[in-house]
Length: 389
Image (cartoon, rainbow, N blue to C red; front, side, top):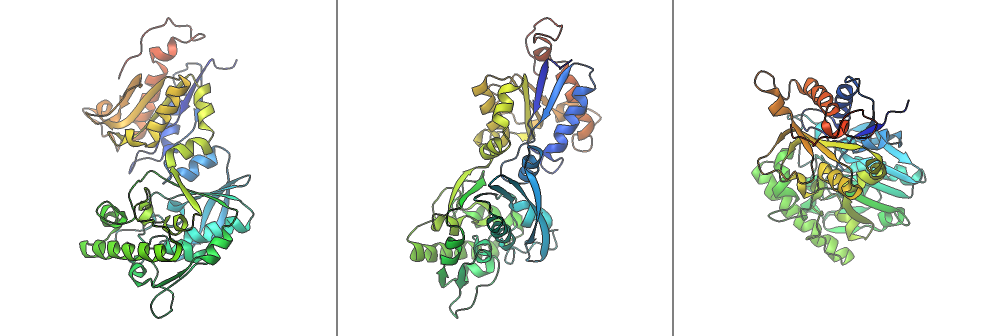
């Protein structure tokens, strides 16, 4: 007999603890252990960073290997996802910060060249729509690496190619983006990010994000100055000022050369993942949706994946249950019918990080016992109000 109820699991990763797909699997184990008749659908979420590719693969994209390069330019084989004419490229998969240890972080050398290699391969394979998720980057190179891999000629005052990585930003004296633009002619390029920072300045790529990529205070200043020079050279070459464009500073300014040539548009990573994974119709078809992340706070409502799921569920009139490592005191849970905190559940003798898998399984079991579910036709239970746990 077909289960009468459908629970859609659509959480983001619990950062530094568990990938989104693993959060889904543990919740599913708990749900199914309850012996309650329920169908569980997995749609792990992401916002353009780590986990974006895995979410797409689970939703029907095909993984293809591609020759690329890591943040330090070393050859590596990475994956991209393809479906029809669309190719999905996750920067974090190719040259993300997680690929480097503390000793190997080099913010002045780290480059996006490998992403450009993957983009070029996708175009040569015939894919006309490219989606590049750019969260989790190791570099602050203004997209020079990717542009160079796609054929751009970016030279210093001696007519030589600029140094790779952020170190080359201040060297830029002349730019020829023609070969890159020709390669991308007729290509729909979308850059997915949840970061709205401009390219440079107080809230720009270097001053906000470079330190976490290993940059010293002096290097942060040098990178910001380099991004200013890069922006000025792009303006002189293309007539387009990318310096203040929202999202231009995401992933160390990755999108700058593509925005300067009109080759790309920036889109919300979380919203794009909802579309790529066909999650909106899955939300509408579900009895209840479970979403969440490691820390649910004011930033969640600023467009992060769980809030995007919640917003889509509101429009579909589908109830939502929130699960998180913890909820901030000022977290906006408007529209959430029930919430579960690993931190609260772990007290007093368990650790929410060490015991995360067991706690998620327990939460899955509790969700299956929710009055919210038991009240639906076919559940065999009387209707009651939902509760917050």
